[in-house]
Image (tube, rainbow, N blue to C red; front, top):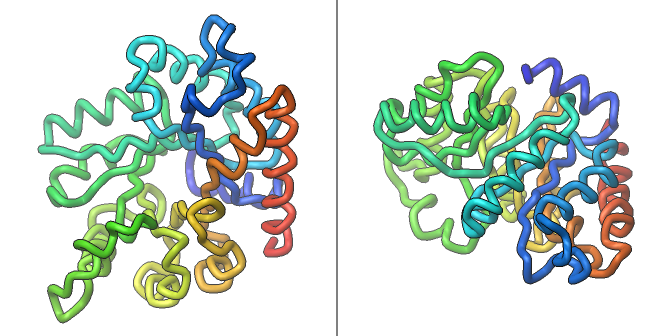
Length: 267
C-alpha cells in the first residue's frame, strides 16, 4: 500500500486506528478453545467486527511464534482474510546485517505479503536498507517507545547534546523518505511530539501505548497530527479483550467504535 492509498483510507473511514492482533490463548474466550485453530477463529471474528472502523491491523509476531506451527498457520490465514484496503504491520522488530535483513524482508513482504514491518535501528543503515528496496512496502523504525525501559537508552545524550531517539530520527530519515519510512513513537511521551514533529513533520508515526498503557489520544493528536493526519494510533488490549465472553467480537466493535468516533473529530 502506498502513502496516498493509506491517506485515502483514513479520510474515507474517518479513522487512523490500528488494531493490534496479539492473541494470547490464556485471554481469549474459553469457548473458542474448542475450535480447530482458536487463534485464527479469534482473529477472524475480531476482523469481521472491526474492519470498517480501522485502517490497519498489527499482529505482533511473537504471539504467533510462541505457538509454533499452529500459530504461524493462524497468522498466514489471518492475513488472507484482512481486506486488501487495510494496512498490515508485522510487529516483528527485526533488522540484522544486510543479507539477513534481505531474508527477513522477503519473508514478511513476499511470503506473508505484509505492507510494513517494525525494525530496530541499532545496527544502522545497512540493516534497514534492504527493507526499503521493496516497492510500496514500509520500514517502521523504533525511535521512542512507550515502555518504561525506554528511559534506559533512548534519552542518553549524544551528538549535539541531543537524546539518542532524536539522533535515530534525524539519521534514519536520510535512509528512506515519507513514502516508505515511518517511526514508532510511544503515546506515553505525548508532549515530546512537539519536538518530534519539528524533526519529521511529514512522516507517518505509529503510536502504541494509547489505552491500557496510559497514553492519551487527545494529547497525541494535539501535538502529533500533521496535514495528512500522519498518525496510526495502535490499540490492542482495550479492543480485542474488551470481553472474554461469547460477545467478545461485539464488545471489540463497541470499543473500536468509541475510538473511531474520537478520531473522526480530527477529520
